[in-house]
Image 1 (cartoon, rainbow, N blue to C red):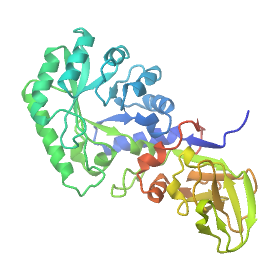
Image 2 (image 1 turned 30 degrees about the horizontal axis):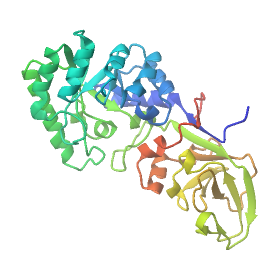
Image 3 (image 1 turned 180 degrees about the horizontal axis):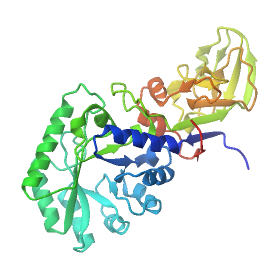
Image 4 (image 1 turned 180 degrees about the vertical axis):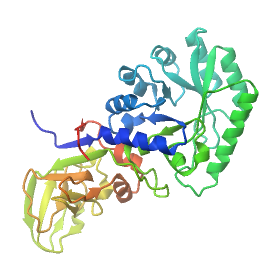
Length: 373
């Protein structure tokens, strides 16, 4: 069997440990594990199976096609689909036992018609300020009552914060209070949702007032700090690492320029290592001349532009041979404790930790070894 050019390794033990740590922080609120976008690139099937065994109240995905394969590994746990079913998706969602979101009169009508008066649990989404999806607060009671009159059961109500990654922004408090008032209005009208949820990882870490009865956790379950202003993740650890190997080396003299555009100049004679990973695999092109990888326990600079399929690493006077391991993301296991984090990759490329991990090509092999730190 031909070995892969690079491998993404996921520590499922870290993810279940992060779940346990998160439960300690959310004041008794239930935890929804967000496994959209292939569990943030970690592999939705394996992650869902591990978290289902560890005990979560619910799973959350963005779209129907993400939810359907997960039923085989989480046959009993509720799976909430954040996006209202598109026309024609209603029957598939119902047959799979999924929990749809309702956010429009048309969506309510289509789901009720597909359910044929059979009870169907739904969650009502309230737009409290993100202005992407959801019903306006002033129309929430009317929509909920209409849904229940047509046979749907509004067992959950939720919203999505716009500024949770910035704890100092007052908009979070504005949305939180508007949502709380809307929920109270629903209860006064006789709608009694069991699950009320608003907080993502950022809000859950930064504002206990956002916990309500359930929190939606994604980033922290994978050991990712959602944003630079969010409190640190003591007790959590990253679950993903990305490793490759050297495929060629050469010794190049002082003053030589390297890579596309020749924008990297060698200050001294150095050994250059070629690694078969590029932006086609998800390594950000903007990491060229900024990023680092780990070779033999040392952080070494990416020399020049990141190519589509290869990257060059300046190894200085380190002895490097073909086949030597290169760590693109994660911690060195050889005792040096050297690490490349998703947060660093995000900084090099001017993006978020979410993009840093989800952009790693889904076609790359995901492995789930036991005992990997």
